[in-house]
Length: 307
Image (cartoon, rainbow, N blue to C red; front, side, top):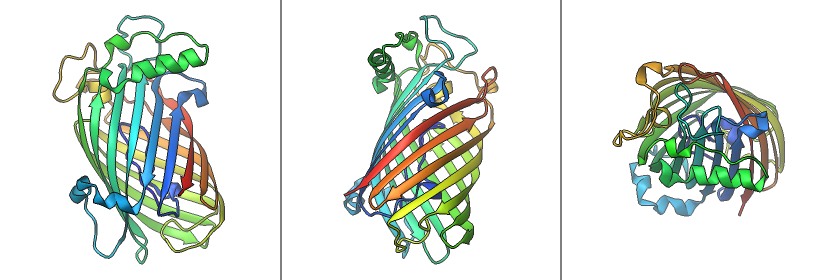
């Protein structure tokens, strides 16, 4: 099984559709709105995740809630996200548009599963930076150069440097299942800290031929399935829009009264797993996060290897 921390609306491998039945694996996740023919808002996310029994020695795991007698996995991941306005062809501040922002985080996480009652509890602590120190501007310019594309401008106006310290707890419960062919789960989560404060509720429907995400002992050498994961979130604070909590010197941010306090996101994807190799393609849709913004879509791929 797996878990991976999310910052803002970015990479999140918490739900049942991300299930990997392996005690040790490395996973690479790449998201970009290039997959939906856009280049704006949440424009790119990269995440490298490692899961291993040895990770429980990390001192930060002591602040994670771990129920006794549940099967628990530990891991960490490094995550880098980039956000831009709708236009990056000049250095002017685009008032009323999304601010430039970049985040770089190290996330320590634990995932505990109760196979008897078909439920799981996950938690994560994230440490890192938001702002120029995250290097999002340099990364976007480098990628555009490699692709022979135009040079993005405007990163001098990005959200200023600040500290990221965030905590997340999430709960998931399987509601219905039919053998190895169908599963329906419900989930609730909460984020608190300097990056994002929010609450969320969601469901996940899986259809295909797959390993039960709440049964660690079930053996399947090959799985293939499709999933759909809608969720609603109540937003309290988002530093990628409003700037850091401590540093108020950002050139431009979105005012609190313009933040959309309720958002809807839907993600669908297709997963193929053979033995210890996991492949996924997905797309996500998100309603507007602030006044003046429009809905946004992006896609991505994931690949994981057991070791």
